[in-house]
Picture 1 (cartoon, helix red, strand yellow):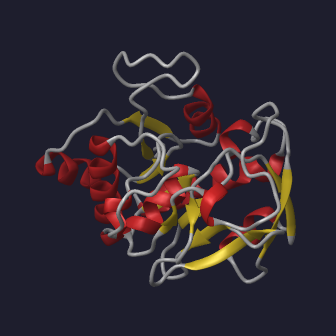
Picture 2 (cartoon, rainbow, N blue to C red):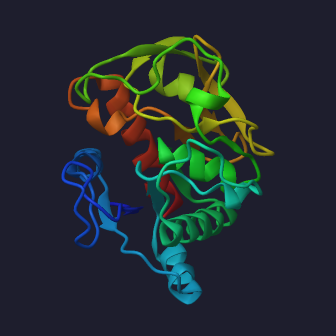
Length: 240
């Protein structure tokens, strides 16, 4: 049986700026099909009973990229430079993540997803890197989405290193928010060369990993990024 992976969505098509319901790039679902899962697209809801049912029925959760994360989640006022937020998405993803975390089910967070994971678990974020981070690298590349823009340094004794099998990995990058204080229980598993957190994981869970890059745009051309999805799907299958 293929595991059922819940996949979160955006409230607009970023390529057109249209708000016509919900939107999800097919690279995410294609990656899940390719690695043996059934993706389940999750429409927005604030109903706690429905979120309970989702968490019970899903074998894993993929938190996708998209809007900025509201600083209200981690107890801050909005700073200059904060982008557009989607309150219903924040509420749904935080609630669903916490349920999946408590149930010890597999979670993979991508870009916004790593930020949601960290904020929901008690950490916080840089609201806008241009104003709040003194690094030297470009973290929102001006290049095609499948271009490998910069390297990240992976800690050896981590799940991420088991997947990528190298201490240095090339990734793409499209973000202006990022993990600042890491949530309790989580650990940093990769950083950029200018010291920014690029991946976190929880060592006490079978698969609880967030990455700041976009492997869904890379897996077709790069086997290591495909293994990230395959390992996630395998963990979800074992949990089911």
